[in-house]
Image (tube, rainbow, N blue to C red; front, side):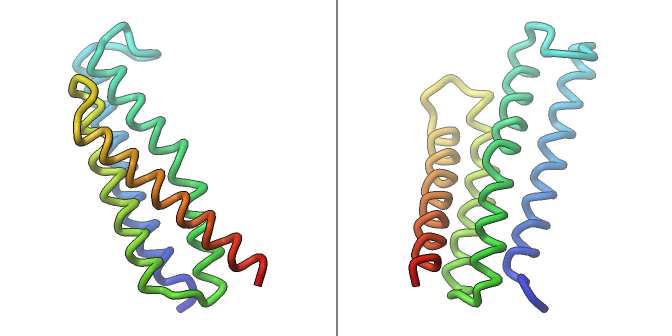
Length: 128
């Protein structure tokens, strides 16, 4: 099956996205806020964690899929995909704690490092 690595990582990230959405909904319901953050710190943190996920994950998945379709090293792609999932799970826990904290820093650093690695890898494929 083509793009197996990307497909499995995308499924894992879709589960994380759903989890972030549910957590945001729970905070929204508890705060009785239908639109916006109602100046509620927990709701604001959960909204930003979910938004941050949506800001970074799509491009990483696009790069993964294109690299995956090129027939490149799937073990390295697995490693990067797993690191991305771990980073995207760590980050939301950090959003609810005072900054700086290891969850937020670790989550975004993993996300940045994976994205940079995917960009470099894609450029290498392009220039070959």
